[in-house]
Image 1 (cartoon, rainbow, N blue to C red):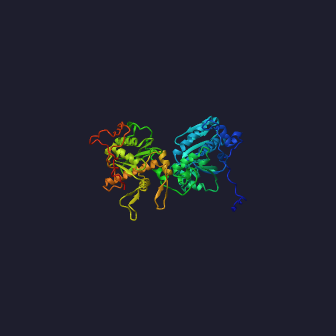
Image 2: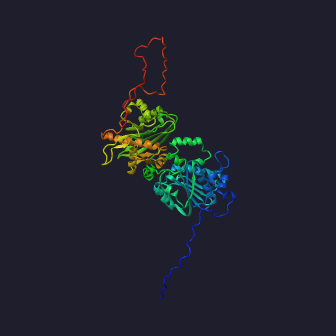
Image 3: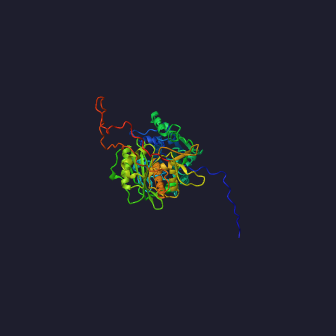
Length: 541
């Protein structure tokens, strides 16, 4: 028997070259399809019906063939338009390939995919070759040439990317993606594929921040000031709304800069773990007109319900959230009302009508802005709320009772109310329905600590969160009352003095002053010379 010794093959002289770019067209294209800018000019129209014309700063990004590209932009600069153009161009120029458009949540993805589908219908070459279109369970478009376009949200910890293998990935609102989602997404890209990322900085040092400093990627930076429609008047308005040109919101959303480091208040993965798809999402929008009480949502069964409210009037909306405390202390979101343009008296009538239906165990309102005024109106209108209505100053310090050694029982109200939500999320003692607006606010809510170590929370898109803070605080106060502990924030008492004006009642005609020679009025009919004294018992600890 002859034994042939094993001889390894000689090593190659050079390593193989980089993988072929899977997103380059295979065949010669017509002139109008060789350039994405030319394609957009031929097939797209702007909002006025004219042929779409790219802005000068958009051309280089549109014509790019970089395997990795990162956009760090401000708001309203044309990121979505670029995604629409790239997706429609690829559907014609890349037969047999597969593309994924993704975003952190449905509130981001759905309007984007509807715009893409609208563009597909506007391009005859695409509309005539679309074979299949699905929206559920995720977006799916298949064309005659074999090109497939998918649209998916990341899902909890990126679970929706598992098992996917695509040639081109477009990520929108990348600043909200969790690190766990990025891990799954990176593995979903085929070798030789492209990953283009679009986001607006939010101050977090997360996966998007790291991609913005990736030396292997092509980088683009479009601040909002590049938009031709961005005027000095709009800049002044945004600077005023955001708290100045050095405020974090202005630095992030207008300048497109990362700015000072921020910290996430809530973990998005923990939030998504508390979302129950089977829970109905009851969201009522009220715009300027006070709703009929009969049309307001009501409880499906007797229970222990709590209402939290963040009240606004002129610019900011009012958010009212209703929770039920189930056995075991689990808080379940039952309804949310979003009101715009209602004055404080109308809001008090709305709150009174809701209490008639739900019979809340406790109501907690943010005492800032018009919250305290609305609470006074409400208590006059529904005296039965005395003992159940609380108005909380977010900037105050409250007594939270016995604390761990070394921990002060005196806590900043907003910080403690935030902690109540964080505790419930950590032990899954809260259930939310699928609510895109609430999810976006929880994902983007950040804070930084001041020199004293006190958290300073980001302002702006946090109205639902502030209402949730109040609802959880109302439940906490109720549990303390059941345990017969001292109040951290006492309930309001019926103030002395006349009723506040009610727009639904006719005004009494004003009485003119008597002339010098006129006889004096009878005793007891004189009008008081001074206004009523301030409402007593309005201190909050």
